[in-house]
Image 1 (cartoon, helix red, strand yellow):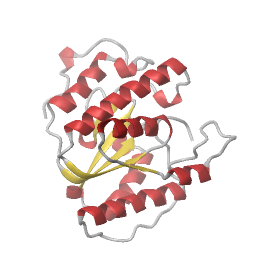
Image 2 (cartoon, rainbow, N blue to C red; image 1 turned 180 degrees about the vertical axis):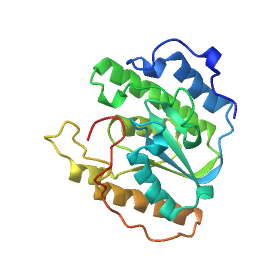
Image 3 (cartoon, one colour; image 1 turned 90 degrees about the vertical axis):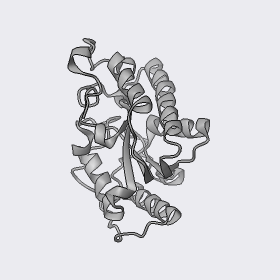
Image 4 (cartoon, rainbow, N blue to C red; image 1 turned 90 degrees about the horizontal axis):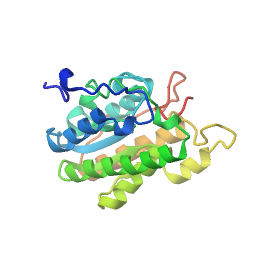
Length: 231
């Protein structure tokens, strides 16, 4: 496959600073995805947050997501898309530069100006992706909490493209841990994972997919949450 950005065209600017969302190569790569890449068409699209470990699909969090997704769906029925600090990245591109190479964790940044800029930029990138893929998917799910969830919600509202954003608000409220650094609990908790599997089942019914099996929800002691906070 042709490289998104050939080595001799890459910026010398570091990929580990709070300017990561506006890094010239990150901007170029995200533009390439919505203007040049042939995005697959699937019945269901599932958005999941980016992870600290690269490539994303090797991280404990993404492996847990995959365990649930592929216990219910065939690969030909679903397209997994990562979003967050990286922008919006189809799963099959997560081994590409610059998505494999940055190390700044936007989710752990507490600088108000940077967080506001992230929400604005990420909302724009998700909106562009939703518009670009309007005809690619029949149903969309996003599994996210925190600022990533807010960006996804805003993008759905701005574009008018419906997304089943989970966990449910009432589930999040029930699992809030006010004394923790990140109050919303872990995406590995059984309540959240139950919402995830239920959303997939609802999507399957809506688009007419016959399920493979009943999924068994288990919390995973080795789960490492996506990159916005450390478990």
